Image (cartoon, rainbow, N blue to C red):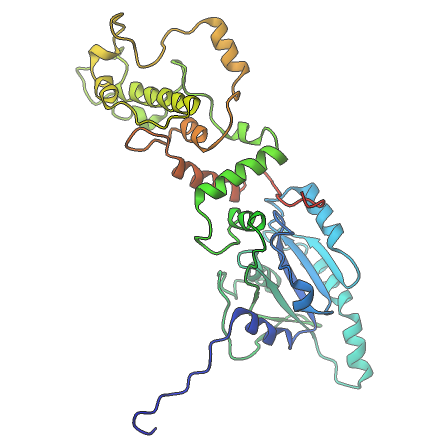
Length: 375
């Protein structure tokens, strides 16, 4: 190579260009959507990208999605050369059904090959979809082993690599990545909630606020069942981590309230006052300091306790009946779960991260945030 010359580096292909190359080799397409957001996780230009090629549409993560809405979406998406199926990739018993559906979609292609007098060959398939919808998991499910690494980025290969999954079916082992095209904030936030949007596109608190609104609209009562009981009553069970040091001092009177309990309840009451008054004030440092002293926690009429130890029977009944009379938001969730910052404020950042994680993992229940009517 002449001195001073630079080696030629071909331009790096975009995700769309890689996908276009892959689609040239295939006869039918397996399109993968997240069953919890079938509309939002489908690329708005799907018809333009795939053209008239037959498609088998998979609604994955069926075990996390609303079963009724999943069936409705599968029915809606099945038309003409497009067939939809709801699928849980944790169970391979439906693999023969998927193979038969693919062969049915490929009948026209098989007839074309036969009419041209060409030697019979297997129908070729490419799996496509947005990141994290389950493309690589579907390929591994079809193959029957973990041959394709599950990742959120497109695999780069220099040529198509085919894997025989059936005597008449071949699968391209590299999933086609469709980069998310976020047309509006409504779609973008749903993609973020289910980890389908690019990392960092939305702050956790933004996503959690949207998730709370969707859950209250679509699944009334789900958040109430998810949250612990109200923590302001004196007889409320205290988490074990707050009691771990309670027995550390052998000289401490076993009937004396632990100062951490007093501080925790004080934090709760201060946070509640902040929410009611709309003033986000720090917890009084003197209260925290005094909460550790015996003089403060003793029932001295000259110094009120940081929380009410005396509660009327009627008050207890009203508290039980009006368990969630307050608006559910991140601040309330942080209070109920005892997530507190060093300044004594509800840790809404942690509450948001935990809520989104629990929602993604199905701990709140099976949910779908896209309705057939578009609402």
